[in-house]
Length: 369
Ligand code: G6P
Image 1 (cartoon, helix red, strand yellow):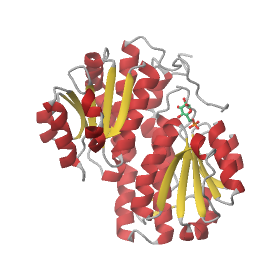
Image 2 (cartoon, protein in one colour):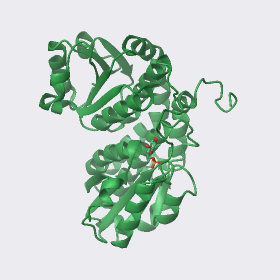
Image 3 (cartoon, helix red, strand yellow):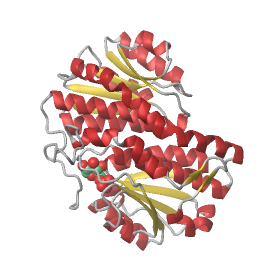
Image 4 (cartoon, rainbow, N blue to C red):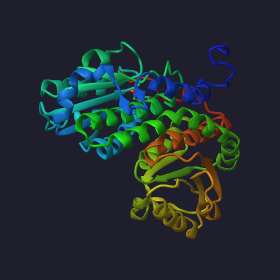
């Protein structure tokens, strides 16, 4: 087993460190930055369909649902198609309004999740086209969907999903660009620019992983907390949800993710010196707004841990702890900002003596309802 872990203490840590490679594998052969072209062989027969779809519904569970939420931002931004993201378990039981003009995208690492499979069968009966985004090649979901795109992240052993999530987000980015390409919603020069940036992401993830020592020191400081709040705006909101999920899954600390602006409608009541608040406060369009949210937390005696862009000075003055990540286009921030949150939950869980790879009561793949 030590061999399988490749010298790492846990599969989860190994899988976190594999992300530069898994994202590169996911992009391989699919983007041509110089020409500004995305190629997705698995869905190419649906090009005509993609030109005319009215709506996309994403169905998934757990971490895959969080990837879907990031996908909603990406697809709406680039392809200008309206997207809804649904928990598969809810979707399947509420007689959803769905037609042959809809595209359903099912996301699943394992390709075996019972609720996601049932949601697919239902949408199929109603005549929708179904794409799958799966990691396990040849699993059940790729077999029951019409077409799909594999994430190619390689086997994921740790129950808490890490590299599969970033690969799912990468695939959703590709799908957003692919649909945009068919619908002509992005200029060719923008395509070249975006794909050049996307191509650099594996190297930037590699650079991001260097935050490990800083994150470990922060974990030491907050490992005994009973609660933790994660806040972000825009596509960093689902990153906050995923950060909270990772922490509760493996360290059993109660954690919640919230859109930063919603804080004033509830979570702010909980803020005190015992409640660490993790902000995703990178330099992008909501930067100034997030800064005022940080000030609100500080004014109430909260401890702030902020993920910031390299070279940031403003947030550094206010936050108690900062973790720097490389600068990248706004769209790609989730791929980088997720990394320190994975490491934070990992170190906290190890320090608390938890079984990181096999947390209590959780299964890697939930094949029952
Ligand atoms: C379980 C796993 C999670 C995963 C979820 C959905 O809860 O512990 O890590 O995100 O199932 O699984 P899927 O294989 O469909 O992505």
